[in-house]
Amino acid sequence: MTDEETTQDVKASEELESKNAENLANKFRLIAGEEIHMTKKPSIFAFVGMYGLGILVLGLHFMFGRADTLGEDSEGIMALIYAFIDLTTSDTMSFSFILVMLFVTWMNRLLNTSTSGKWVTIWLLLVSFTPLIIQIDDFIFFITDLFGEGKGDFIGIDYNFYLFGIAYTGLFFALTIYYQNSFHYAITSDAVIFEHSFLLSRSHRRILFDRISEVIVERTPVGTVFGYATVSILTDSGVGIVDETMGAAGAVNMPGTAENSDDTAAEKAKKSFLRSFVGILTYQRTIRTVRPDPKHCFYSVRNWDKCKMLLNEMHKKHSQSNLLSDLKDSISSNNDA
Image (cartoon, rainbow, N blue to C red; front, side, top):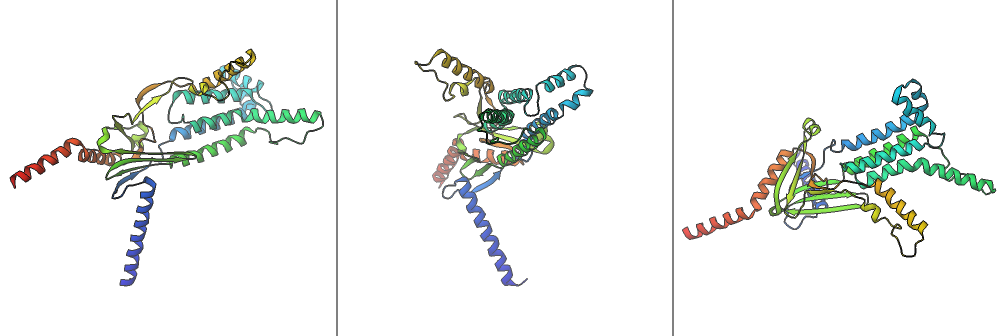
């Protein structure tokens, strides 16, 4: 390799590093003179619970799709369950499937785990009500066809458990991968930065080192096996402490359900029923506790020990006690001089 080629390679490498540094500065919105010491993102195993939820939904689709054949060899309670599924399932509709999916949605929301986010709940509700939506579409076509105005189904397909199960699960896995890659963390020379961008949701949090009161490391059994842990930062302002909600605030604030003075008794009963129904689906327990939030912590990251060590070092460097110590040493040096 000639000297000219070597010089060109060095220039290309420097340009690439400069471009990467510029991209990181824009992503984390760095201020002038700020340098990045470390960047992190969640491990590929961070959201294994979401993949488990997707497999559960896929399994329910296959179970209901084969309910008529599986029930033949079942005994006891399982035989009764499959008999109930068979009685409440037709070629285009399964009331028992809707009830089971609504129960899964409610339990997932109630437990308030890493799979209890709003977009996951919306996906579960979509899966739950799709058979009903298709059935309503068929009913509308049936009614309009009686009057000679039927122009075909708007949706035009029946609910196939295998097809929709695979399609919805594939969509959920794709969104989960996208969601997993939407978190970016950085430790800079001045602060800790948490960046999140998913669908229409955006968040950016910047925490100065002197605001940190405690650094906590949490390792789950799965994290111990696969070599990752969650590093949480607590501050006096409450960062790192999460409210686990118990209640039905979503139902109370649901548009169109507020009672008016001119409402009839029927309208009041209708709105009360809607609030109760949505309240049951969105019910959660409330506990003010330290629970890792992927938006505000180093969630399930690898090399977590280096991350914790750097946080402690930067916190010590920027703490008031360390600054006072440096000031004291500076004054002592000046007096000695």
